[in-house]
Image 1 (tube, rainbow, N blue to C red):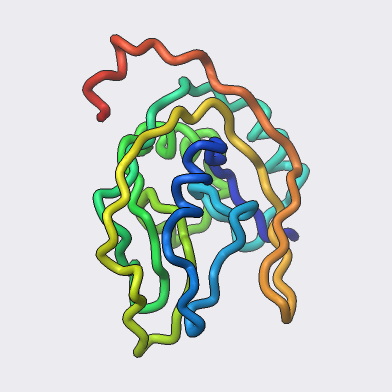
Image 2 (image 1 turned 30 degrees about the horizontal axis):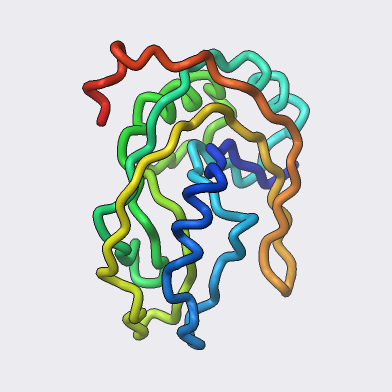
Length: 173
């Protein structure tokens, strides 16, 4: 059994914009930019080959993710950038993975985790303005291995999404 997730990667322009944020606060454990993504579905203990088979059958359209408007805290420890516009894509992923999904599945809340704090820390970056959008053109199936140094994400598979029909998705933004 593996720990895995299906995610939407960020484009280079979005990563560059996020790298301009002040990530110097010492008491925040910052997520490295190569690990930034939007999790569509997380799997705590899953048969990776069965998940890979289901992942290969996902048919979904490209969509636009909208960042912001501000960096916020998610729960008491996660410093995140909210991402809107991906609910339909997340629902498609969740339907495609069916019974492999966790029984106690949390609702989808689009976000990019920038860092983690201790519960009593209010990060300086909280409330900073972040605005922009990006096109989600593919999905990634990632295996996540936890060690004493943190999580290591390894690409298992990737799939392109059906090209975006701008007129059909203009109401998502």
